[in-house]
Length: 397
Image 1: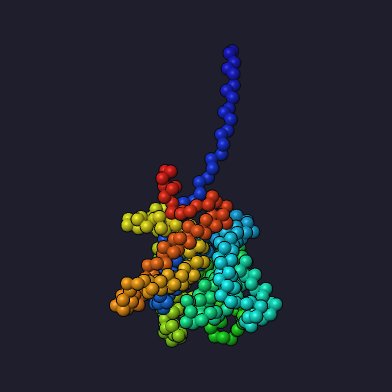
Image 2: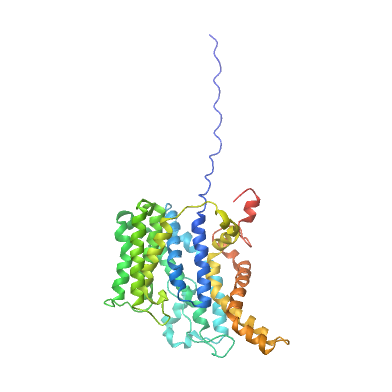
């Protein structure tokens, strides 16, 4: 009997590297719309924009969905990664903001609002935003180059970073609770908002502000969990939309009886903001089509949508400062020799529109100047203009 030699088994090849999950372009589109709405709102101050598109609720919901996806890894790693991505862009902005504040004459040690040594320690929030960084409410001259509330406009929006940081830290516990009691976890922030609105419970100071943020936007963050886990998709669409419509209707009804100094600005009406945002986000996410490519005419905006998502922190941090930077730039036109009374009157009547047209190239310049810090924070190779076109040129998005 002839014995054939045993064929040696081929050595195993390298294990295939799993490709990263494709980005959900629908969620990217929503984030871009939210950022654009924030810029337009802070420029024109139109109260109705908070009803048309509640950007903060949408942004917290999207962040909640992404955080739930990340929590497949150990919680501590996720928290550390999210905080690491947030801090370097904040440090660059904080350095610029503090330089401007100090150069304009702000003396933190003499500021009565800081309350002595403990108040000075709150300057650490410019480094780690566990609270909102301090700033003077009035600085400079009302008739000066900028209005005397410019510091509030520059630093005030940093409340979002504080809220985001605490939501990230709380997410492992919130996700654990959501997967055991989804309805209770979803509605608990709304119930807390209603309780705080009655003023039966009052929490002063920075702690109170943080609790208000959690109460108003916590439901949207948890909705992000529901979207990621597929819980929202299992609810019959007609039922989800009907409940969302009723919730939004309540929000508008409540707002109509509690209008603030800016009318229908929901930022001044917490319970209306919470209910309207919650219902609005349900409608957006229950219809979520999970695009891997932008369809139809939206495809022409692919580059800007990709860029805005890769530079979302930079755009949010700097947009208010850049809005104010348009003022001295436009004012230079008044000194042009050939300006007449008629052209000056025309400039006066179109001043806000010129600000709107000028702020976008300024944002683009800031993305080029400091946006690459977001890449370093994410441990990626720095990119000047990450709009996805270079990747497409190498063989597709």
